[in-house]
Image (cartoon, rainbow, N blue to C red; front, side, top):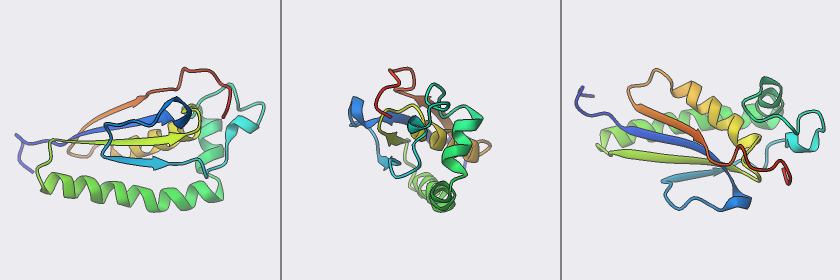
Length: 133
């Protein structure tokens, strides 16, 4: 890839209960992963917390999903670069946008760090109320 061209990847988490993003190229619904909301001591934390992240990502479901998702993300980014796309917006959603989607988004962000892309990462709904999981 030339130094002039660099794909802009916007990676973000969100909560479906606050509305589905309309400006994403790709959305992943991760509501099938174990929900820390239902574990009282994890509920106040976010997916940025190591205990919450481990609860989600180190589960049987989380390990199986991430094993598939990370290569898919890399392939989509590589193909978007080859096609000279300007930007790629990837949204990861769970119910409230505080636990599961945040953990997955952070993991993808770590995986992509160091890639020859311009990566922006944010959590749209992380500070909204903790009700609803």
